[in-house]
Image 1 (cartoon, rainbow, N blue to C red):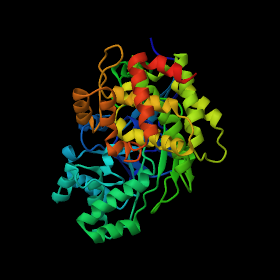
Image 2 (image 1 turned 60 degrees about the horizontal axis):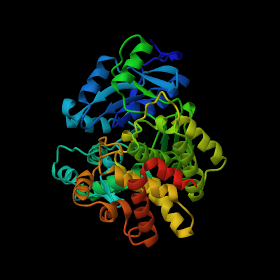
Image 3 (image 1 turned 120 degrees about the vertical axis):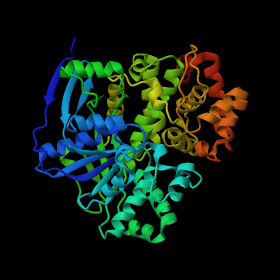
Image 4 (image 1 turned 90 degrees about the horizontal axis):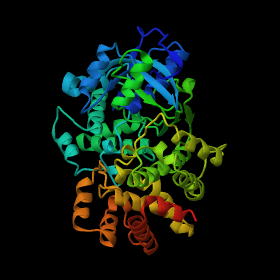
Length: 481
């Protein structure tokens, strides 16, 4: 039985005049559902030559070939419980994969005179950062600096592509990060400049002078595609679309207005160009992403498969909203005009969307890189001000229990994290206070200040023990008293 369809939007603009003005690196589900939807909406609203080239650097070669075979058209389905709106996206003009097309083809695209903007969704790991700087001990970075005619990291590819632009006498371009990192543009700029400095100090100076790295905040819940969601999309379309994705109706994009040259008119699609992204970024990271992580770790421990399953439980729903309003919001410098209560209500409504099937274990991935900005940064403010943070403590302790790889009901919990080897070693040889202390010793996650705080360590130890004795649901209920 097919799903009800509110609207079906086909491409109506002339694609023949589109040129490769944007290159998107890391073309996965989120890029399709967010960046390309904004870009498609731009093309629907004005006569434009802003076409997009898309690439994936590692896996996904076959997916790009499938997109080529579909004339670069794909479907984004926006799901709201039983409703489904279908949008055909026609913004893509070309795909590239270094394994299929050669590394030189990718560098040549960066050096194309038509190119003005590079957008990135390469996940936190893709920036190869350690302590806010390029990790010079990362084997992939070491390899990319050594190999003259190849690169496997996005940072290495960007630096080497920009070198071709410099040599060709072309102008600089804008590199726009769309990943959930605080100050993502600043961090991307730092990584590219430090890589370029190792290649050629003159290149680093040219990038610093000619290129721009605006920060941005992106928001759209896009679950990983499953066999069931593929079938749902096929039933609605009347035919399969292996390139299609499903997502929520909500979308938001806030972009620092700092461009090296031409700027795509994404504001016609609802994007906001602002002087300072940080307040929007912090609000999203702490209210949405922080509560998402809370629900992911504690929900997975309790055997809940999806975020909407968590929302169907009054204890989890109440706790998520209280975490937002009582613990996270007081640590924020909110943007002008934001009603935090209405914003949190909207988040609860989004989390409750049963059509999304957003798995707790998907959100739980890469916790070592997400925890610092989502939960630990606001906890530091609570410690400084002497205010309470019982739910955030349960979230951190829940992450620690999740990292042992077993739910309360004995189910397997997948651990996808750069530090998974360390987690496994800690879990094998310790539990209780020793295990917690081992995890707290990871300075890349907790820094050196939090493990030195007796208050912090005591609260995390207590929360970890409570989860072991009472389980997630009872521990949350106790924290709500």
